[in-house]
Image (cartoon, rainbow, N blue to C red; front, side, top):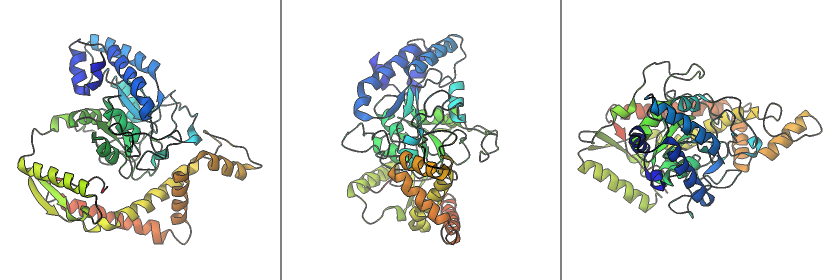
Length: 406
């Protein structure tokens, strides 16, 4: 049944519902694929074969009773910053190497309720800080199309596992590109949903005003199905949108792009862009025009400030969020001569160099005398950047651009 691993989630759904294959057979096929290829990729940090087979057996009973949902019996990989009850959750960091959460985050709980099967937890840049998945404390993830290349980050394991057919779909998280960039590098679909549409409860925080959980899959339909399963209001997340409507995104998918207005931001084609990247994107834009879309040049004038604003806001929030890793309540503990020394020794041993860099940057921008000059000003410019997009979407339906310039 090895050919099952090349099926997309919605294709597996038809096979399962038609009783052409069992959920246990599907789970065994993907677990076999992980065993075969992941030694070269490093996409998985923890493989939960026993759990996956138990969930698959329950899924088969649900399907036999005719009570299945779109994800019943479908394997879904989980980025290792989503807390999972009874399953190690490390954030790819030594400081959480042996942490076993006592509860499920909301997105994970909703997938369990939907009957999804969990083959394991996926590698990432430590605490989601990175864009190449080379910052994991447990080794890098390789791009399955060319193992000499990076898969992008921080959700590198989530992207590589889908591209390598180790799972048909996965969850990643995106703070400053961590779903969209690895999806692009690995040739799959990645979506950062609107903030507040997917609960962040149970997502180990990097930058709370930016973090978002989202789907990664090999086609748009699977991404929509996975999004539908995890989205919706959650009282456990104070930033969750208090709306009861579920978008049912799968039903909104369009058969073509005829008449769609596609905006091309002139600021996104920058000096120094890799010619190969620009050529590929320009060809894609031309193809969309051939298919009936209206191509409209737009301007996002505050683009030049975006990276600076991101690195102030994200690192400031990281500095605050990561203060909770203090050796007292959970995670690594390295005893020092007193309490303060214990904090220092634990954090020095537990955090990797990129995490330390971002904590220090954020602590600086929040410090007395610098808060107004950096963090407060960055929040104001963030508003200007958001306004650019709001104005653009008065003219166009979507914006098309390179994901990264290189």
